[in-house]
Amino acid sequence: MDFRQIFRTSKKDERITQLQGKITTLESDITWLKEQVAAKVERIDELKQDVAAQVERITELEHDAAEYAVASARYVKDIAELQGECLAIASENSDLVTFVRKCATGANIRADKPGGAKLVSDARALLKQYDSVKEQIQ
Image (tube, rainbow, N blue to C red; front, side, top):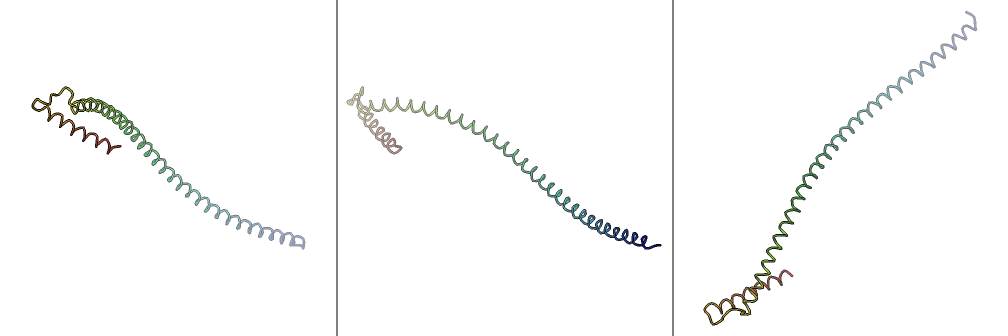
């Protein structure tokens, strides 16, 4: 072997050593990247599970909201019916109060007949009760 061959061989060996060093570095980088990718994939799987749980919760809440809407509509209907009943009772009450007021004044009642004076007295007591309740409400 002559000097040039030895020099070339030495250069080749040096280049091979450099390349082997780069290969080792790249293999190390690849291992690190694989670990990073595995960790990211694991995190993505965790996030998918979280999203699935949230979607399930949203579905439950939507179902609950639908049930509440039905119940609310029923309550609104019940309230409207009760308001109608209250208006009917108030109308009857108004007629009754008008009648009692007439009785309290003694209109069309003969005080000289048995029970006539008591009817006027009872009517006045009822009106007093009714008016005091109205004042308390206001």
